[in-house]
Length: 281
Image (tube, rainbow, N blue to C red; front, top):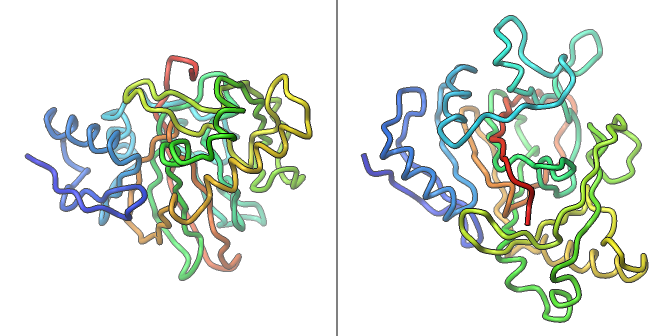
């Protein structure tokens, strides 16, 4: 079959209409999905009814399912070891403790797994329960951010490396909420996508600390300019979730954040990732 696409915004993203991901996907359909993903950075599939095993199968159509190094209590229980590759994102509490990671509030823009030596290339997020308002996900186009950066900022940072670090559970840099993970990495400020050959901004407000081998004052100023530019409205699509929504995004060329939502309204998502084998360049 040939997939049908609808742009989500002028900036980033497309919806694939009328495709049931619960069934077996033909090879040519998978190839079309992957092409649309590379072209549009994020893909939305609405109205899905997926089991956890089906979500893992869909993830495997994009690439090798990534291992999620998160506490056991944030993973589904009662199944097999394969479901260790699904993480719960939720504010639902049992005995006073959240059953999922990143339970409450807004979240700064970030690239998933940027703190790892080999970050995962894609993330899939599937909505089970959503609040009546808020908890939206903002997606920013890293290609467009790089291509429209002021020349003096791009020139100063071209070919540079940046230090990144993340405490698991933090939603704001230095908020003191996360668990120190000792997870840190050095990656290019601007990353060349391994499949498209295009360059994208590859630093973010939540995880990036400083530019390597650059005086702190200069590094702080330049990174702030990149962050502010990358988060402009013309770079962003804001997704208002419905139950049954599945979004696939490319962590190599996009970043995302989350808006605030009422703490007393339930929010539950299943999250998987697609691993990679090469360090960013």
